[in-house]
Image 1 (cartoon, rainbow, N blue to C red):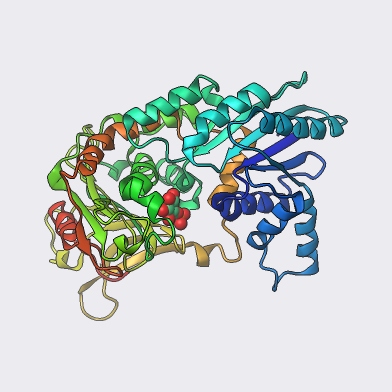
Image 2: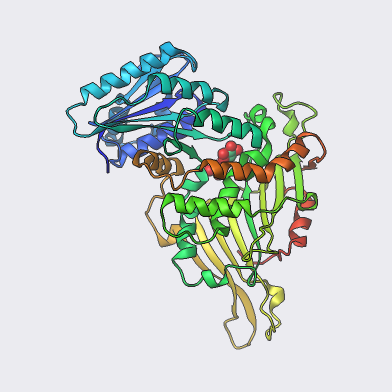
Length: 484
Ligand code: BG6
């Protein structure tokens, strides 16, 4: 790994994302020895005028649960907090960014005894409306100037625009200032353990490749459910809706990994090439293969307009025009305020031809990958009911991570992804052409929803969502299985 001075700048340091995700991820990396005190300095930047200590106090409670913490943990925490410095300034002011640059440079000078180059990472925990101006400020004032080489990278997170045009405009603005290898577009689903496992599962096992096609697979579901609504984020959410918030990015990334062809190697560019290819093979979405919902009570939020047409639930069927997948529906489903919190992939196989057991009614072969909670993979299959009778029953081959990997802590998505940005590995980040292809799939549908041509139906919070969604599932060939 590279060595040298590392400056991590969290822009929007006093905001929610920074407190809940970015700083805790940095602290976990520090605890595990990935951020070394003699190399790293962390800078928080935001508009609020507060002192270093005030920032440290604001984030402290998000890093460690005070009560149960041991003295050792508290000492670790205080050492970590000492690495953080705060700089206040606005997102379009030269002064603020000049000051930030001065602080970073001082840090670099103080660490110049370390062999190696200087590295500057800017993490945007910011609303995208300020991305262009912040990029300009960094480019003008804060780039790495070390003679010893090194780099400057930026980490940005969705929403990247609201449709194809606005996203392309934003990409152009950023692209004029930074090269693609400097831009890390985070989709935190790509940092989840079982999402990262998909490539290994598909391409390192003899079991799956021969079966992974239209001859054997009947339908695929990629599902995201949350059992809470848009609490406190109604205003933001209403501008975007569930398709832009979850389906166009998180579920579509999972879709790519399930449906793409095998890359020539594990080089990030080869993997991303395959993802782009499968996205470009998706056929236009048909209205009759879309169900939209809005939960009852969503509009009670004072920041949500009374006439809001924004879906908080959607089921969308994607179809791929390819030799492997012709005719196989990929059902992407996401909803807020449903009956459970779960994200999973369900690959349902076709019935066995010439069935001699007459067991089909018990259910089909199904391969389930549960991304969260309680990571697991299981295969539903038919076995003989133990006992004297020659009857059959559905059972599971079950790999539950909690049991199989007892005592192992699965890293948080953000932790892993931030480490990748420091290491310069773009495999789990979204490339510009991938983002464009993703918007191409959903933009026509989104425009029709925005125009009010398609409307969500009301569903009760705590339910499965609109009934029409279950009907669409059934029409797409999904057969309800029992047991797990
Ligand atoms: C975010 C969405 O990207 O993902 C949120 O904006 C959603 O609306 C969240 O709650 C879900 O992430 P996770 O990791 O809890 O599934």
